[in-house]
Length: 111
Image 1 (cartoon, rainbow, N blue to C red):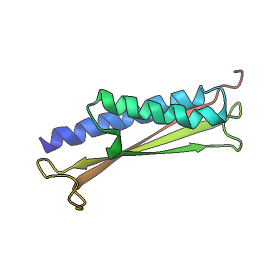
Image 2: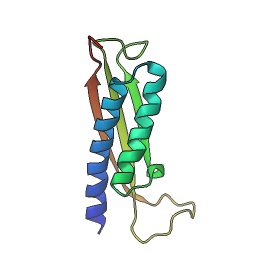
Image 3: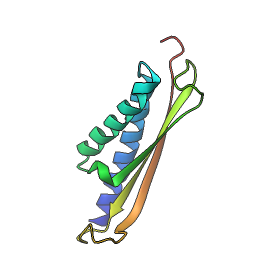
Image 4: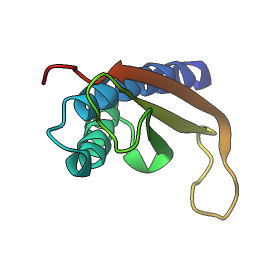
């Protein structure tokens, strides 16, 4: 049971990071890029049956301002895998592992 939870979190983190980086790179402007990435992470985790609250994402741009043509964006998604059958919310750190994945995507040069 624990092995399958870790494997599911690994697949979810890879998919979420990849899709969020693609959504961010294709955003029309920097102000909407972060919102798009966060929405995609939440949707992707939901597809894997995971609550978005178990994940943290970090967004980065290779240039400032973000989304300059020819630059790149990256998204890192970390998912904490809880100990099975242990009640959550008791103030304990009930994670057995944290799975992290990073994806980088180029921003199109010609729109």
